[in-house]
Amino acid sequence: MTILCLILAAAAPVSDLKATARDGQVFLTWKEAETTVDVYLASEPIADLTKATRIGHHLEPHSARDWWEDPASFKKGEPHGKPVGFRIQDGGERLDPSGGLFVHTVRKAGKLFFALTSAEDARVIASTSVVAAPGAIRPIWQRDGQPPAPGVGKGKPLWLSLHAKGGVVANSEYLLFGDETMGWREGLPFKFSVSVQNGEVVVRPTDRVWIGRPHNEAGDAGTPAIWTFWFGYNSNIFDRKLMASGTPVNYTERRNLWILDWVRRYYQPDPNRWYCSGSSMGGCGTVSFGWQHPELFAACHAHVPIVSYTYLGKGSATRLEPSCWTGHIAPDLKTSDGVPLLDRMNATKFVAETGNDLPFLFMIHGRQDGSIPWENNPSFYRALSAAPGLRGLLGQRDSFHERQGCPC
Image 1: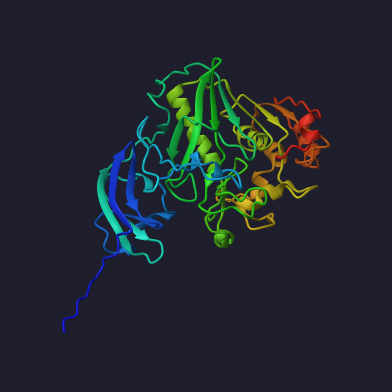
Image 2 (image 1 turned 135 degrees about the vertical axis):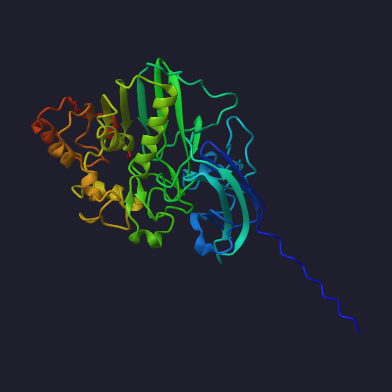
């Protein structure tokens, strides 16, 4: 009797892995099944993962999909849009959204070896190599046609506009894949807008960041593209169970500083006429980021901001809990800079201790605001009045926005 054995080989979870080096970064692309992967790097072929460095983790299936183009990324209950892939070359074709993508920022020149592993069992499922060198990374133009020429904003004032919570900058002109300092993992994509209009260079970054899971602990969110109050978030935000062992890091501020430095070099605005403005959460960022960078900004306009994150009144510090910690923020919980988080986000303390000549500040609050607690404001205004050498002027008035309890 003859027995026929038929062996079917399982389809490879990853295929056609390619590495392309340009502008100080390596772009890894691949075809895949429904696969979650980690990415490893070494200076020689990777046979032993203990001799390689893990540079990417928790890359969800179909990481080449441009989640910025999906309404469901930003609004709970919103139906998903048609999948589209990232555009990773100026004005180029989009990637296949069913494939994978990871971007590594090069730190050392030479031949680099990469391996993709299955996140389930740490098994190497694909590998490749490329010769690359460090360089100035640059954003990728997302519109059709050519990007604006260098120097198009030369000598013009710059406005940094920060959006409110729940917002996102639609139709952004630029996409950048950040390095390991700009997010919970290397290669996170973020978009921003720069336009020259009415004689000004207008910069609109976005506060959003992708964490690869629904952010259900933020009761008013529940989406995988979270808000960060223009500060940052926990280094282990990707896994709720690990956040207690993580650290609050000012990732969003770092992104903003990178954007502004690139705009300074490329668009060449007048460095003496930089301004920052925002409303609600954007106003919070105007105070915690813009106003606290007097070396950058000449003036700031903050509309109904949180000036200090405390548990007074309705507790403005609760805004930081979902993204930075696992609950009540203790006074000694420190950021990656070694400063207590609540001190770093306390503008009253900043005013009392700074010796700098701070930017001109125009600010609006409402005593009956239904969203922003009033309790922190009087001490902030008193600190401004008492601080010597400040050139900030303040305006306060109740407005229809606050009387209606507009959400932060």
